[in-house]
Length: 157
Image (cartoon, rainbow, N blue to C red; front, side, top):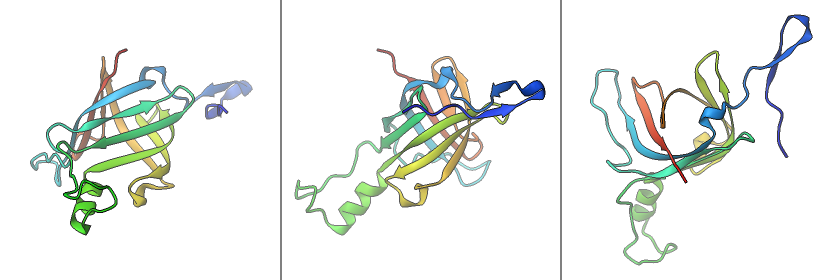
């Protein structure tokens, strides 16, 4: 089922799509950097390593998936996913991020609005996550670029 875009009424009763997904973001994007810092002038940290792996998918129907992880990622000494030690399970959890839900662009504010329906990290579930974005060619940068930036490149078939 496809949901209609959010609309705003303007003078004369004409409706304009104010928050519809932008065709430029529709597609699959490969993560190339996940960076954060504590202060605007502080050093950038890469909590998922220098070469994280994963994808963001912005579908034309308004659905969205985001999943990425640290490389190299944690593994369990027992080589059994159900037999990890508490420390191994914690490391595996912290090395991976995922969420899914709906998305739209608020062009007037320059943000992508993510309506999170589910997430590997419980604090994101059933929340709305707005991210400033910049799109230049096949590079998408999410975040305020002062304290957080997530860099993606468009996947080509």
